[in-house]
Image 1 (cartoon, rainbow, N blue to C red):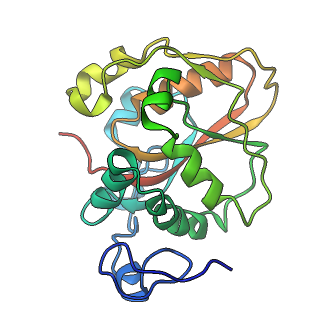
Image 2 (image 1 turned 135 degrees about the vertical axis):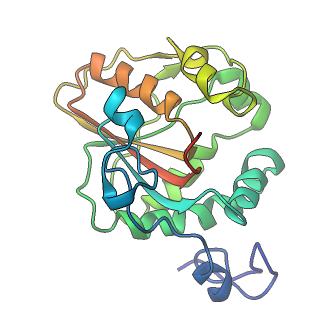
Length: 221
């Protein structure tokens, strides 16, 4: 059992999630009707137009939260202010969301380039995966895929340019024949990075690739 401390959002006494009960209960959980593939909100839980027009290489996405306040604050604190406690706050609702999910063969934190890892000191997806999977006993593998040199941040690009920016970004020399891979990441927007990684994993033999994502941004218009 993790010891309690100060809530990351309001400073009150917190529990296992790193948030107090009030702040945790008020999080923008990703509920309601969603595209069964990319998890963006859709009327009637129908497949969204983008997934119909351009079916992604990944099979589906599981998300815990919507990327609105205060989730955007927690993710920014984790990635840019090195507040690793925020990973636990993001992982806790994801772990609850995954309780009803079938277990994959491998959990893969979204890889980051070595140069970015050295600069940041950690991989935020690895931190989230470690907390989210701690109670499930699932194997986390970080070395089956290598990410090439750091490219321009996806957040700085218009969504139409993101697929081009990550094309050929991953290398995998592992034999993943028939495996189901769950890819953990902090946030999904267009899904371009997950799609490119899924393409690489399936080229290495993976049968299914599922995104386990802490938060999802609203649909891009």
